[in-house]
Every structure is written in C-alpha cells, then in structure tokens.
Image (cartoon, rainbow, N blue to C red; front, side, top):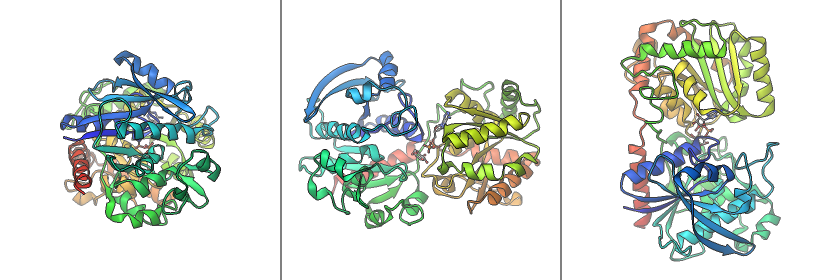
Length: 482
Ligand code: ADP
Ligand code: GLC
C-alpha cells in the first residue's frame, strides 16, 4: 500500500474541461480500490466549492508563504470515498468559469502565481509540513499546472518520490523570465536542463526535468513526443529521459460510460442487444429536428473545437461529406472561428447537420449512444477518451493513426475483420484521407452483418482501469526502491 498525493488542476465531477478531469477522477478511485491511501489535491475554484457543498467541505489547516496565506480544505470526490484536499486562495475561489482563462478566452493574468501557490501547497503536504499528519510516499503530478511540484521538491532531502504524467505536451505553461525572477525560484533553475525554454520559463519542463518518473497516456504518444514533429520543442528533454518515460494507456470509467445502464440515454443496450441501439438514434433525430429515419448513418463529433482535434480536416472535406446520405451531429466549444464555420454549415443544411456549441455531458452520452460512426480525426492525440467511449457504445470510430487513437482503434479488411477490427483508420492527416476513411465506414455500414461484427468487437474491449492502475503501481514501486 502506498500513500499517494495526486495533484491535478481538474477532477470530474468537480471541475472538467477535458479528459484530464476524467482520468484524475477514475485513476485515483481505481488506486483506492486496490488498497492505496490516495488523496487528490485540487484548486478550490468557485465552482468546485459549490459542487463540493453536498459532500461537505471543512477547513483543515492553513499554511503561509511570502505574499499569500493558503487555506487547505477537505472534501470527498462525489460518489466515491476518495479524499480531496482543496487549495483555497481567493485567486481560485473568487473566480467563476473556466479554470485557466477568462470569459474572453485569454489566460488569467495571474496563472503563474495561482499554480505556483498550488505547487507550494503540494510541497508543504509532501514534506509533512502542512499539519495534516500525513506524508505521501508518492506525489503524482499531472500536466504543466503541477510542473513546479517536482522542481520545488528537488530542493529537499526528506521528500517523497515524484511521477509526472503528460496528458498534453502542447500546453507547456510558458511564462517570462521576469515572472521566473518574481517567483523567487532558485537562480540555477534558469538553465535549459531545468526550467528555461528558449528564453522563457516552462512549468511543464519542471516536471520533465525533476520528476523521478515521467509517464504519458499512451504508448504511441510516448514514442511520438520524442520526435521533433510531436515534441513541441521538448523532444530533446524527453529523449534525454527516455529510460524514465513510460506510456500507460488511460482507462475509462466503465460504470459511468455503460450503455447497458446509462441513465442519460433513452434506450439501454449491450453487446447482445446492440440492435436496440437504433432507438437512441431515432430519439435524437426527433430531439434535434433531423429527418427521422433509422437507416441513415449518423456521425457524431464531441470535443474541444481546437486545431488538435482535426476540425480543419472535417471542414475541408465537408462538401464531399454532405454529398453522402448521412447525418452529422456535432457538440463542442472552442475557437470562435470553428464555432462560426460549423454553425453556418448547420444553418445551410438543417436536414443533415446539427451543431450545438457548448458543454453538455448529458448530450455527450446521447450522441455516443445514438451515432453509428464517431469522427475523431485528431492531428495529435495523447490518449483520447471519446474514441474509447464510442467503442464501448458500439459507435465505430474514424480516426487518424496517432497517439492513443492508433493504440485503440484497428481497421481490418472487410473480408477479414478478425476479433479486433473495430473502426476506420487513416494514416496521413489530409481532408482526402479523412474522407476516404469516412467512405469506407459508410460502405461498411451498408453491410449489416459486418457492421454488427465490428460493433461486437468494439463493445468487447476492456478499457477498465485495472491493467493501467497496475502499471502505475509498478512505476511507483520502481522509483521507491531506487
Ligand atoms: P481532451 O482531453 O483532449 O479534450 P479526451 O477525448 O481525452 O480529449 O477527453 C474529452 C472529454 O471531454 C470527454 O469526456 C468528452 O466527452 C468531454 N467533452 C469534450 N467536449 C465536450 C462538450 N462540448 N460537452 C460535453 N463533454 C465534452
Ligand atoms: C489530454 C489529451 C487527451 C487525453 C487526456 C487525458 O487532454 O488531449 O488525448 O485523453 O488528456 O489523459
């Protein structure tokens, strides 16, 4: 049994902007189930305090650093026995909305300070200097928001071991030299082997340079980020640490994403009754005002509308797509230009395309249950959860062969689907290749027996956390025994 402090800037259902939140909630629960003493460390954003009310929030202690008094609060992750420690400073708790940026979409001007203070709180807990009477063996950090934690811990001797997980290397947490100086970080950290990154400071680099072990969320992404194409300028650092870098594929919450028991969808179904899935499609067609027809293939897309997700590829083959007999249902939010372009297409083709801008969990479940095909043509994808949710719901994914998409989706020839053919994969990120893959999906859909076989393959896959949690345990063991 290990004592683990799991530091994260998001955890579902308290706060979520993307897959990190899902992982930061389901991995700790899996580790708790396996007998570990795990506590999540999370910023006390206003919305988190609001949602945590039901489980009860109590102040446990207070710590001070120059310029800031930090309250530590304690609550529980709703629906679980996992303890959550909330780092409460007004810069977190007095702000509504997105954790990283304001209503106009630009980053909060004091993000460096907010996540520096968060790291200082983690440091105090890690060293058992926060009056919690609890010292972790492992501090498990996630993405740039927690990157300074291993860097701060490196200054001490009686420190726990640290793991840094990269969920998305593209967000490097970059700030100026002036901010580096203001934060009073050790001056020798201004070095390209430490926090300095081409004349700026990178919080992400703190994790990469100082953590005892580095992990990322799929095996393919672990390889890709060591190349200039996917390395975001950090591939050199990652190659230097290659022997400490492991890819561990994310699991999913098999209870929350279970078509057999999902309360958010109209009709439950499972592998054996997958034929009944179509009732969800009809319900969604009615709900969205699309022509009601059970045999029209419906494609779904859910996600952040950002470059990473391949929105340009979707847009650039839209005319060819619209020439096909199909329906397209999109849910997402992000860049204004993508939102506008998609809304315009829906306006021009109301009988084929439905676009919902916003964030809506219920609707996300309904799309997974209703669509036949799921589009996920990401340019890069560290792991990706939506393709796994899709597979579990028998909604066959069309994906670009990168990162976790490559590791979870397999395309096989129609006459030899085997036990693992479960989707449609293209290998060059162009609109043409995406369209050809969509065409293959639509052709396959016309062969009901083949389609059903692939749905069964998809729905039989095991995406539970068991195997991955075990891999994390092995990594914890390895660094503790060093
Ligand atoms: P990323 O973390 O890069 O955004 P993932 O596929 O790992 O991509 O995870 C995205 C998560 O966020 C999924 O749980 C997905 O259902 C959810 N999600 C993304 N956009 C929306 C939205 N507009 N409404 C509801 N859920 C969303
Ligand atoms: C990031 C990645 C996504 C991954 C998620 C959880 O947001 O973009 O691919 O699934 O983190 O690890």
